[in-house]
Length: 214
Ligand code: ADP
Ligand code: MG
Image 1 (cartoon, rainbow, N blue to C red):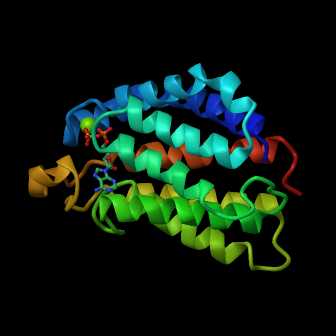
Image 2 (cartoon, protein in one colour):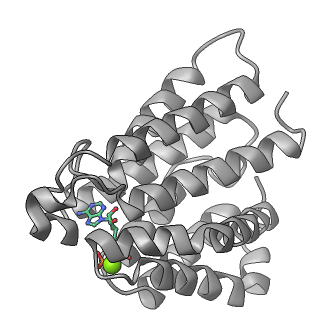
């Protein structure tokens, strides 16, 4: 993975995000304060504004820089949480020179771990963690499995992200703004979980279509 590829992926995510923005906005209007899409847009814009600088950095430095940029540009709960994801990924030794899925799985899990430390939410709290934790666990498991093509692995990760996102629908929230609603949050998918599912879906599709995934 090179820094150019990280930028390419963020551009793909931005496109996919715009295609789904109104749906996600409705989710945060239902159980949050309606600013989640604004926050996500602001973060992606801030990253792409420093595209040139990022391209000149080694991947681990670029990931750290992205984390710091998100911290400075997005407010609310999501800013520090998404920033932690990037900073956590950058911490893994070897993240500058990635040639195998095992390193990427380690980076993903290190990112998720830092988000978890920062937000103190776990599976079942109706947050983005309901997508991130199961996907990270499955990813770590699948990279150790023989006889699984990369496309099959990516397909399973997309399915797990979808499952995690849907699992937030019928539960009450115990973390974040939606927790103020108590039982009234039931029946709505968590917006952060939807964002993470969409991001994972977009990255997996990008890797499948790029044909790197044999
Ligand atoms: P805010 O809640 O400050 O308005 P956003 O609307 O941008 O920020 O993001 C809301 C999303 O953040 C929620 O849908 C949820 O997925 C996620 N979230 C909130 N609190 C936490 C937490 N403690 N840990 C993990 N994710 C959280
Ligand atoms: Mg909000």
